[in-house]
Length: 69
Image 1 (tube, rainbow, N blue to C red):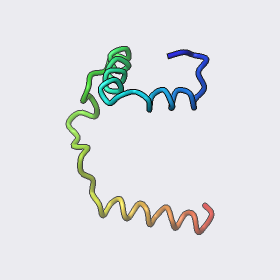
Image 2 (image 1 turned 120 degrees about the horizontal axis):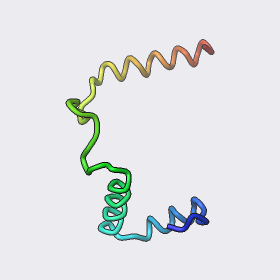
Image 3 (image 1 turned 135 degrees about the horizontal axis):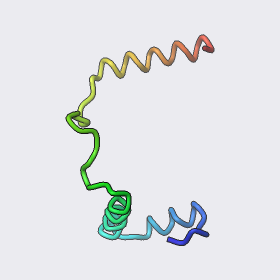
């Protein structure tokens, strides 16, 4: 990566990579940051969310928008 690249140039370069090249690049960046693939919040299932809680939060934020809080 060249530091003088614009955001658009980086996007274009990234999109021109093959899927395997993208994965390799992302894994390399993770390794440089000291992260491992699949690391995240431990002991917390990230795949499912309480749908009713999400709906309640959406409705609550709509109330804030209407009342200009």
